[in-house]
Length: 291
Image (cartoon, rainbow, N blue to C red; front, side, top):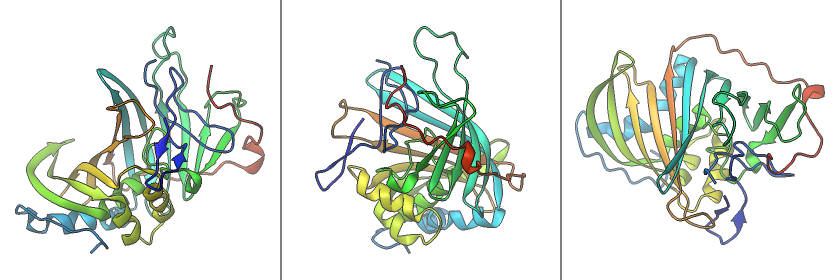
């Protein structure tokens, strides 16, 4: 998949190849799913109560996560094209104070492979970097691949098959057109459900945190800054779940969309992350696609 930026340049950031799953190309990371073959510039509209201050609550929700420190994470990323839907799922832990976490990401099994035949990919999310182990495509099993997320045209919002939880929350700093959709129960907890649209550019300008480089890259890479979302918050104002929908219009089959869902629970759980040692990082040529 090639994302066309708004300046007319083709940014090879989100790769879709039949039966490939995560893909990293030579010099550029491309990635993702198989297809089967007070924020500056954010004009808020608060339309309901307790949604009178809905947009403000959504925008500042990342601050509650920083106070919470850590959380356990479930992720899901789904691509939809026509009637075909394929999902990547992950689980792990995340430290919002350091902007780092570790996920075990399960890819769809290629055609002809028994269910559960593909080994999960271990991903380490860190400020400015994504590390992947067991990603295939000629990389030795005991080696890691490091990707500079600042060089990805989408800032790794979708490329790695899981949105970095801090980036997902910081993206809400550009929230507008926010409406209150009512209270619901999620994992046994009462949550407030908000719907709206967030603006990638506004979010990038509003944050000074670790996710800023990723959002600045994403602002340049996507066809549009508008990202529809559903977000759920507990009584402490902590983000419990966010679903964000990214649409690609140029250079891809008509109607392709990617939906990223991040769920947070178990706040305060241990989430210590150890980055790979330099000798364990693969520096050889990386195939652009898996066989």
